[in-house]
Length: 610
View 1 (cartoon, rainbow, N blue to C red):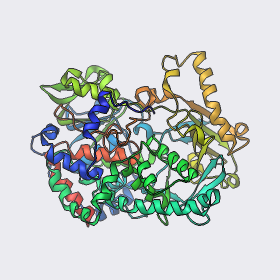
View 2: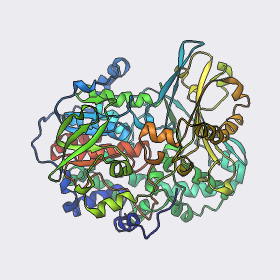
View 3: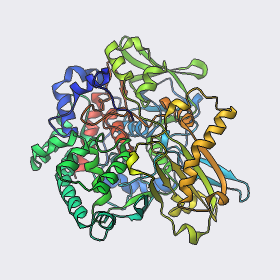
View 4: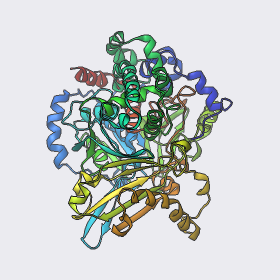
C-alpha cells in the first residue's frame, strides 16, 4: 500500500495526533482525559432505560455451554423492526457485531442493519451446493488465522474478541493446532512455536547466529507485551468516564519500564533494528508476518500489535484455533449474544441515510420503503471511512470541512484476488496437508509486490464438516497486493471481465499446484473473487483491505465524530486492522455511546479482574 506523503491533509493531521509518549492504550486514555472538549460530543445525556447488573464471567460461561450448542441464530424481517432503538449499528462486520453485543449486555435496546443477506462482513462465509452428493461446500470469505478463542484455554485480556465472547457468555468451539506450512525460496518448512529455537526453521536456514538474534528480539518484546496487556481494551472509553474504568489498571504500568513503553507506537522495524537482527531471512519472515496481519511490512506495522501477536505465535505451548464450521461460527456466537438479550439483526436492510438533525445523529432511513428508524442515544457506523464519507449515507455538510478532507485522504490499502475451491480428496491424503500455507516467490521483490505472496487456507484439514465426505475446501488469496485500478471501470458481466478473472487467478492456481500438484483434476467447485467482488459483497471502497496507515507517521482515530451521537467502529478506527483490532473498536464504541454504560462496564471490568 502506498505511503501517505507528509504534505497530505491526512498525514499533517495524524502527525499532530501521533502517539509518542505512552503505550497506545494508555496514551489513548490520556488523550480522552486531556482533550475532553473534543470527545464530549460522543455522549448522549438521556437517562438509562436499564440498570441491569452484569453477572460474573464464570456464571455466563456456564450458561453459554448449553446455549452455544443448541441455540440457532436468526435474523428478523425488516417489517418486524421497531420504530426506535437506543442505538442503531450500521453494518454487521465483527466490529459492528462486537459493539452491538456489548451494548445489549449493557442493557441498551440495539438493532443492527445489514445490506447483505448474511451477517459478518468480511467473515460472513458462503456455501455452494454439490449435486453429486447433495451436500455443500462451506467457504470462508476473509480471515482464517485465529488464536485465543478456544474456550478450553484461559483467556488473555489483550484479546478483545475473546473478551467480548466471554462477556456475553458465548463460546466458539475450536480445534487447536500447532503448525502451518511455509513455502519459501529457501525450501519447504513447518512453522511451529520453535521457529527461532534450536532445530527450528531459522537455524536450518541461517544457522545458530540467527537463533541468537531471534532470542534477543524475543527478549526485547517481552516487556512490550507486558505493557500491552496492562490495560485491556474493555477498560477504554471515549469520554471522561475513562478515569474510572481505566484507573484501576494504571498500577499495572508501575511494573513496566516507561522508556520501553515509548517503543510501542513506533514501527516494529525499530524494535528489530534495536535488537540487532541483521539476518536477512529473519527480517524477510517478519516482513511477511506483519504484512499478513496488518497489510504493511515491519516498517509500517505498529509495535503494539506485534507485541501481542508474537506471544500468540511463539509462547511455549501456543496454539492456533480452527473454529468449527469456519469463521461463520464466530459471527453466529456474536449474533446469539445480541439476540438473547433482546437485540435485533436485520439483513437485506440497506441503510440509505444516517439522519443528522441539529448536529446530532437521530436515526437512519432505509432504502426499502424509505422507512425511518429513530436512535435515541446514537448511531454507530461499521462502514469504512471512505464508504462513510463518499457514499452519501451522511450529509457531509454536518461535518467541518477539515474533518471531511482528513478522512477522505486516509491512505487506501490494496485489494485481493481470491480462489475458493471444493475438491475431491481421501481422508488419508488430507491428513498429510497443513491447514495453512504461506508462500512467497521472491523475497527481493518485497512481500507487498503483486503476484508474489499467497496465503492458502485448507480448514478441512481439521474440520470435516465443511465439505461432503471425501471432499475438502480451500481458500487461496493474495494478501492485499491487487491494484484496484485495472478493475475499476469493468462490467462484471462482460467478456473482458471474465478473461481478466481467469488471467489474474492463474498465479493462485500455480501456487496451489505447489501444494497439491494435481489440484486442477480434483476440482468440483471453483469460484474466483476479484476486487470488484470484494467491493460488491463487502461494500468496501475499491475492495480495499483497509487503511494503509504507517506506524510512526499516523495513528488510527478514536470512534467519535464532530456529530453528536455518531460513532465509528471497524478497521478505520483505533486500534486498527485485523480481527482482534476491529473487535476492540466495537468495544470502545459501545463504551462511548453514553454515560449510561459506565456502571455495567465497571461491573464487567470487576468480573474480568476477578
